[in-house]
Amino acid sequence: QVQVVESGGGLVQPGGSLKLSCAASGRIFSIDAMGWYRQAPGKERELVASITSGGSTNYADSVKGRFTISRDNAKNTVYLQMNNLKPEDTAVYYCNADGWSNRWRKFGSWGQGTQVTVSS
Image (cartoon, rainbow, N blue to C red):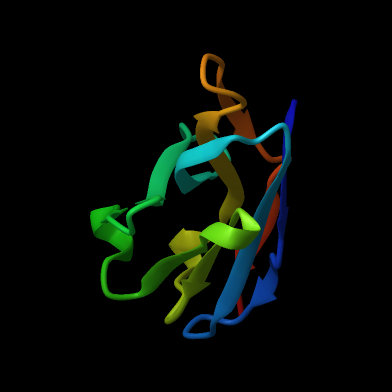
């Protein structure tokens, strides 16, 4: 099994910054991609940003220029630096890791989520 644990959420004022961290552990042979998703009350879960093992990134249009995803492959960890936060960024943020537990078994694991609230 592969466990994914997020940290770093909290309450921040509009215009402020937060950095989320996510670490994957367990039966990991390799990780292809890690990503951050978010879900606001009454809305569907959406992709915020993702990064491959090679460093290719993808961002939602709503966060481009404000959020930066980065990854430490040696630590199976991904980070999300969030700047110039807006009230509409308020959501539960989930981390996802997709990879292989061995040469033949794939995994896709989600964290439990961390709350980010942007409010004055």
